[in-house]
Length: 404
Length: 157
Image (cartoon, rainbow over the protein chains, first blue to last red):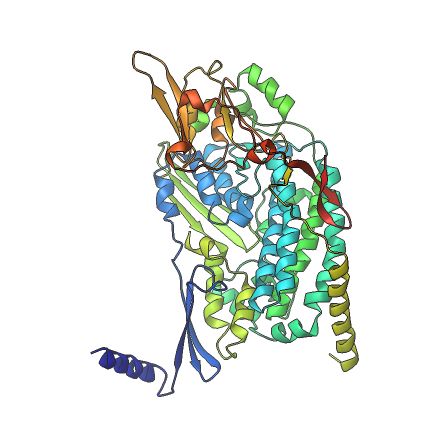
């Protein structure tokens, strides 16, 4: 019985691939390098003829769960979609919620959000680059990426009180003010990282051993990138200058002078190098934020008024925001709002529908990793099997984010 | 890539590796012997002050993980919060919303329990003071310092 079903499977495959003999290789979901997902790779000899990404292993019904929670409770929930980039992923939700509530964010809070967003972006890129390194067995890159990420996590911890789950942006502002010694410490971290990036180039990105693995591998043409709806560094490495930080007016990006890096080649190497470029730009943005940050409140006036005077005094002393009691059951008027935010992996899109109750009627999240997933289906085809991990690493795909 | 530049880049890569072999920059700390002092704003274990509490139950209402529950003793009218650390995600919403400052974070996070039941703290025990077990056993305190050459290091206080 078992034999006949195997025969059937083989015949089915034979039909599917025009009579060619095709191997099926399953990568994941247990393999440490595959992340929480599975690829069904079909090979003709050593050449990849088809890849089927099989996702959903870490689906946590986040959109549906959000419908059962009061608005503010979804902030810690969505954070867990991309725990390595938690301010950026929640910022989209908070912004859409602010649009529904009709709240203006004070300038200092906008700058602080930008500051943490860029710290998150650097940490996210270092995570992605480290994993790309270990995918091709370069454990030095892995250790360095994860080690240097610790510096940015330390900065984020000093700002927010938590290493990863910052829960920093709230409707109307942010939860804590800049610590006194933060500027000094952040500038030291930036100077260290700038020095360190030169060593990254020497040991990994200019190293002929790794360049041979990445150069001209998995080329994504400009037209294909546009047609497939790719976002983030993967899109910009193919020559398209698109970034949610440019097209949406959020945070302090309009008041900050920065260039979005773009590369033309579209291969795996340029996707990785673009992330290095972005780390440099992010560090420059952090410098400017620390220089230009205006004084003032970090929570919207509308909510500050609701906090008792005694607590407002402790807020000023400790630099930590107290919530008005209203936050436990925010009731936005019926309506819809959308928001886009540029994360480390690309653009995240939120769509909230409110029916006037304390819980959202519907929350839709389109995450960058889900949109970039298509790349894993198209890019590896025609390459040798050993190129598959190199391409996967270069795309910086994050399964929990795509599965939500 | 010409052979000459390829050779140069190989040498660059190897010499960079050798440089770090001799001048390593370790960021980790040998934990039970050394303990990193967390800053005051760290969102660690939560401490409850019953004398300040006004029984408004906002903490239980805003808790996104349903970790905080209001308890009522037989014969008493007022309800007081208790916490279940099996569920707590340390977002600190309860501390932020408390209108009487009856909850606060302590910079302690290295607590472990032997059973799940021990992780539930009714109001009377919610107010206990938290001490790091490593420090109790005489760990040396170190603090995080940023260094332009070595990145993140930890120096004794």
